[in-house]
Image 1: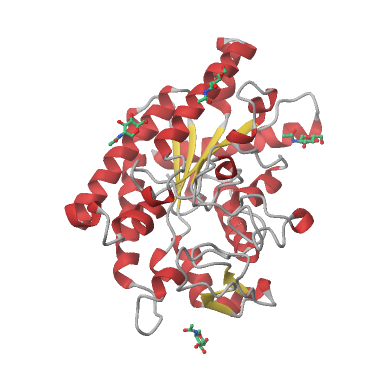
Image 2: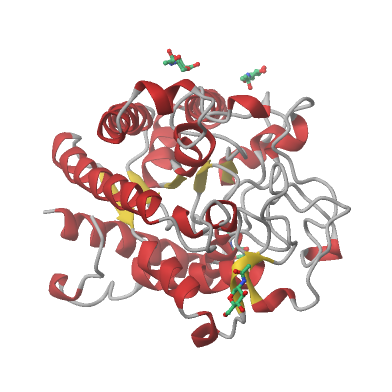
Amino acid sequence: MAIPLALATFTAIITITSANQTSTAAPSLVTFIFGDSLTEVGNNNYLTYSLARSDFPFYGIDYTDHKPTGRFSNGRTIGDIISEKLGIPSPPPYLSLNPSDDLILKGVNYASGGAGILNDTGLYFIQRMSFDDQIDYFENTTKVIKAKIGEQAANNLLNKAVYFIGMGSNDYINNYLQPFLPDGQQYTPDEFLAVLNLKLAKQFTRLYLLGARKMIFHGLGPLGCIPSQRVKSSTNQCLHQVNEWVIQFNSKVQKLINVLNIKLKNAQLTFADTYQDVLDLVDNPSKYGFKVSNTSCCNVDTAVGGLCLSNARVCKNRHEYVFWDAFHPSDAANAILADRFFSKLFANTNGPAASAPNHMG
Ligand SMILES: *[C@@H]1O[C@H](CO)[C@@H](O)[C@H](O)[C@H]1NC(C)=O
Ligand SMILES: *[C@@H]1O[C@H](CO)[C@@H](O)[C@H](O)[C@H]1NC(C)=O
Ligand SMILES: *[C@@H]1O[C@H](CO)[C@@H](O)[C@H](O)[C@H]1NC(C)=O
Ligand SMILES: *[C@@H]1O[C@H](CO)[C@@H](O)[C@H](O)[C@H]1NC(C)=O
């Protein structure tokens, strides 16, 4: 059931994209992006008191003009690279736009570093847009779109758009795994997962009621292997327990998505699993042209915050490192991961359902 739905989604994307290539009059793909620091493109720059920010060197050192933009990477995010592959501009940060800007008709990025599925995730960053906040802003966007182009055209645009959602890493890293926050003490791992799942079900449903149909959820990577977690092990190994929780999270979300695809008429939710791809990058860096995957280029694994501050010592060969700072992949790693993500989602669209990509639906 879920696989044909997923295929329908991606066939539609391809059709729209190629139509754009052959005729400039054809509508182009609109994308709305929700997420955390892995997908943020600069919303937090506008949150005066936010501590989750990257609008300073050495962030952006390998981006256009070598300038920081609020992306948590030395270069591009995975979302930037996927947009490039789709032949569309990477949507701008919501907070950079006037809410009534015509640009919202072409897509918006609501992602915010430090954000989580739960409202209180990332609490100590003072300001960040939680997933609920991001959906509130999106609701505002839907109203503005309706006022601009009319109810029917707006519904059409919203139904045809693709929604990329990447959430959940911070609910572990910047919530459950922090001993001084209540959630880690209040809930067993299973209970916490149930809380996340229930909340996520509401959030998917709310997006659906606002017009979203084609939603792609980016599953979590092996968080136990990011530098900030590895340093908690005396031998700098991946934290097996954390990876186990991530695997359970991914599996539970995948099941939720299958249920919602049946329950919500015309919903086309897809689970994009990149866990094994990231793990392979970490376990076999040389296979992909990397040299180091067990520490960050900025050498900030044990630094408070783990970010690549202006006084960090940045590695010389940035493309040889899988991780840029203690949390985030380098531009070079994002390029590999975006390739994998893209080919899983968009490969085989002409083939039979039997050749559908793994881990979908
Ligand atoms: C569509 O095609 C036009 C003309 O080739 C190009 O400028 C544009 O970037 C493409 N994508 C979008 C989203 O308009
Ligand atoms: C989280 O925030 C949303 C939107 O601001 C609100 O509707 C919801 O009640 C909040 N949830 C909790 C558990 O605080
Ligand atoms: C929502 O949109 C209106 C314009 O229609 C704008 O005035 C308002 O500030 C927006 N609210 C938020 C929270 O962005
Ligand atoms: C990373 O792995 C290399 C071997 O590939 C090892 O020499 C080095 O000590 C490790 N670094 C850390 C910080 O564990």
